[in-house]
Image (tube, rainbow, N blue to C red; front, top):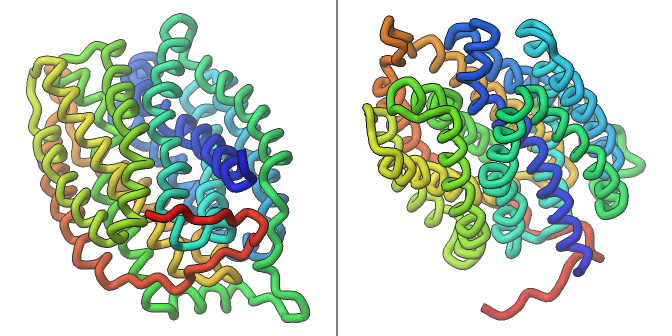
Length: 410
């Protein structure tokens, strides 16, 4: 296995752990709401606390990520994430868990920016679609393996068990980072003064192309995260799923996206980022419209709709991530992607919080107003299509020369 593949597999493993840590809380929602006697609004706060803190740390990270070796800072950030996950595993009550989620988010938020920055530094634009498809397939594996396994050990033990499992896994991945992520310092410009925080902000906000990329991130996150955190509680209270059957949603969605994510990456490199994004974003509004209007429904039908939702949602993210990564030059890629990650996390947190405020739990235990969230998500999603057409790639090379391999003829 060549160096590039080892690097991408390691980054995918980092992404897997980060995603499972974030996702596992959502299907645990019904259980946590019952154990801690909390409302949908309090659960929404539990979800959004992670994303809000991740957004804050990503904003701060914009001032430091381009000043250090990518490998060194990734190891420190992942170590902090490991400590936050251990804190989640040991949480005795709602308040402690909320604090632990904030700690996990502070470090977890930085991992996304670092992963994309390393891919941008190591992989040329002509192969970034495939690289992003491989790294983002971690979402699929997290859905089909990580989340169901976490729910299973939670069902035979308690809700603390999935976080303990993740902590053990994170220790192994920390070793992989040390072994397979190369030192990346080519983005460091010697003999020149480092930009001040104000200069970093001006460099990003003064670039219209990068601001359009950030705007795209905001629209996508608002369109998705008003729905995703409440999908599991809605399926239990309104559609008729049992807590055990929730694993089928993530297993089915994850199983298909394991195959579709790399395929979408190849299609992105072959047919273009904007064209592939437009197709999948247009398809994504169909399951959004259906899933937010479901009542008591046979499990197989609900699974078809939820699987289509995950596949199309993942399909739009691969070309979007490849395009956004290429809107910054190597010397300020970390800063820009950290800004973008901050906006992404804060937007997801805001969407979760707003979704929790809109949803109302009735006396019959059902959740109401989910269809209103669906309408808003559709509008926001469709507005992304004209926006992405105005974003341009400005960096097409790679600065880690020894990782490059010949590109096979199409």
